[in-house]
Length: 320
Image 1 (cartoon, rainbow, N blue to C red):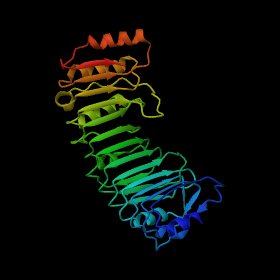
Image 2 (tube, one colour; image 1 turned 30 degrees about the horizontal axis):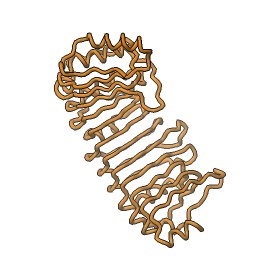
Image 3 (cartoon, rainbow, N blue to C red; image 1 turned 30 degrees about the vertical axis):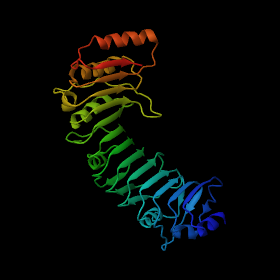
Image 4 (tube, rainbow, N blue to C red; image 1 turned 120 degrees about the horizontal axis):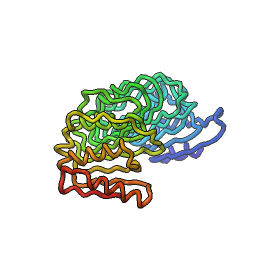
């Protein structure tokens, strides 16, 4: 009744959290799907989406669907097709709600956050057609196909993925300017990120060091490098890295900032990477190394790095 009254008074924003018996989810009134004034729709919890074919949301620009339920595999694609001005979409799938097919075909979309975190999802895969996208966040810990069309306007991407093949995913984001990435799969050789200026690489995987240098090799215009652990990730300890036979172009010509925030421990694998970058980064201005070690240990690690050769005389080395 409340929603119906709001719709009749030119509702512009609806944010709803509903927690009840999962077997008896709340069904939204059908007139909500024909609300011409609605601009923001945020739904979370035991809410069932059953979209009528006559739906029309001509003003909707922001939609967040977190842990809601869908009446069929066609529900989400139908709902999205009724939102011609949609710009910001958040989809957070829970264990019980997932359609077997996930399709996001929205020409107007500028920001997309997609979370598929449960390993027991019954999902065959997803298709993304979002040519105007500027921000893309994907958290996906499942094995399934993904078909993603090119995103030529992409500015920022956040990828936390555990799927075995990410070739199509990487091919679609090569125009990105800022990239944060943690991937179980190694990147193939040959990718080029011509416009990438800011790279954040998570060090939780054993192959992280070699993944890092593949990304550096592919990013000839990189200016800032962050070496970190993404939220909730725990380092598995790095394998010995294969020192590249040639120095990545970005280290020689464009890298200006190094920020090591993954709790630098001074272990040989970490030290070798830090020393390598300091030795070859001709235009490095600042190198900030963060560590949770005791002050005495920090002092020793800092001294070790300070004594290592530095290609940039202007580089300011800081330990936090």
